Length: 137
Image (tube, rainbow, N blue to C red; front, top):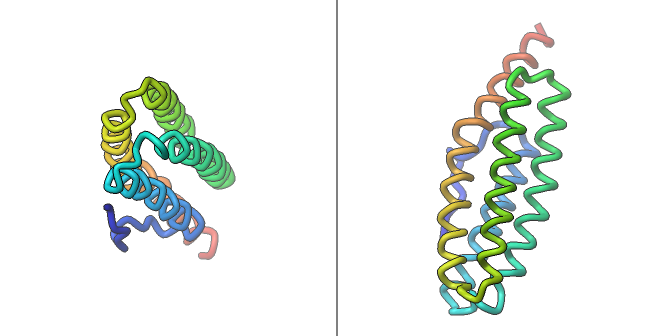
């Protein structure tokens, strides 16, 4: 299980809350694997993850757009690539190899989520904080 740490916060309250939900969904994969329920539950968890990712990406992209973030197009491309990779993994989950697909999915989402939050999301958060400070000056 992956514990949420304050170091994962980017400083955008709504985005940090949404990232926490993504961590909870990722931990649900672990819980299902630990209870040997991968076959019964992983498709539901992947569906929930996919739906929430769509919601999160749309919200995040709207936030960046509202601040005229110059890296928006690059960030959208990262989101699109992740969504495509997740869709491919979702197909694997349905092939009958639920446990191995769940492990692969968990590793993929974990690595992507941590890397994306700590790099790409932190970058736009710094931009917004700087722009917000300039507005207030």
